Length: 334
Ligand SMILES: NC(=O)c1ccc[n+]([C@@H]2O[C@H](COP(=O)([O-])OP(=O)(O)OC[C@H]3O[C@@H](n4cnc5c(N)ncnc54)[C@H](O)[C@@H]3O)[C@@H](O)[C@H]2O)c1
Image (cartoon, rainbow, N blue to C red; front, side, top):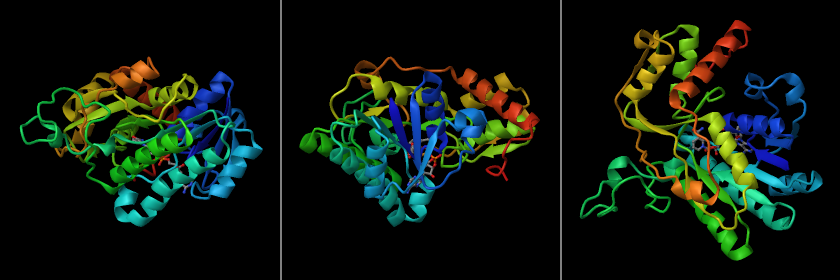
């Protein structure tokens, strides 16, 4: 596959790129500036040089289309986007990048129909509202419903970011309806692992990094979340690039649904010093966490799931190696 990743220098993109290169696929990164700092956490320089970088803004349709055409890109992964805090602080910029940028991606694919064989993009679990929204009650929006939320549960996000992701999912559906463009949308919750240095749910990864340094860290929230190891998400994206598929669905992902005390226990199992170094608050993040991923497993799966303790162990060990080489960037902690 010739794969282009918009926003490919981000956390998830770096891990997808690693997986693609490990398999022998070719990778192009389309991002605002050349900055492979997250790739350096998981790949050596020779590997990184195999990646072709193209400077570009995802909202620049002409540049994106020309890049896809000139490089004979066959598969597209759209990750470029601004995260919850940025969309909250500047919703107009957030909509420009997250909504218009995604429209530009679909328009580029439309103009190159026949060339691009698969488009996979990241939506988010933030398309769902707070957990209490979905309590089964006679007056609730899930009257009578119980158990994990299906992909088509009502989307009532509590952030602009979530609203923008809903908009993207809707536009994907319209591009399939009007232009026959198939796409796979994926809805991660908390992705954790090396490279996760920014965003509302980056704190568990920062806690692991602090542990590697022997430093104290307070996770500002508590409650229940769904945690997924970043390499699993990368492998799911790669699988969605190659599995036979027609349509434009948005799929829930499901990792490990755990409360913060359970995450803390997992940390202590890997590194007992977590008992004194890592603490957490009790605020529940306002996104439903019990998501049903059976549709994804059925349509495109089966999908990998690294045990939580193992994901923590791999991440801690990587951070410790980087620290011993003097290469652990702590700017996100300071
Ligand atoms: N990390 C998570 O837990 C998580 C959860 C749900 C959804 N997502 C979604 O997955 C995607 C990737 O997440 P991530 O954690 O890797 O994000 P990230 O913030 O690490 O990376 C985003 C990348 O997009 C690039 N970018 C931003 N604006 C751009 C623009 N105008 N043009 C081109 N590139 C631009 C950035 O430079 C960066 O490299 C995002 O769309 C995010 O909303 C992530």
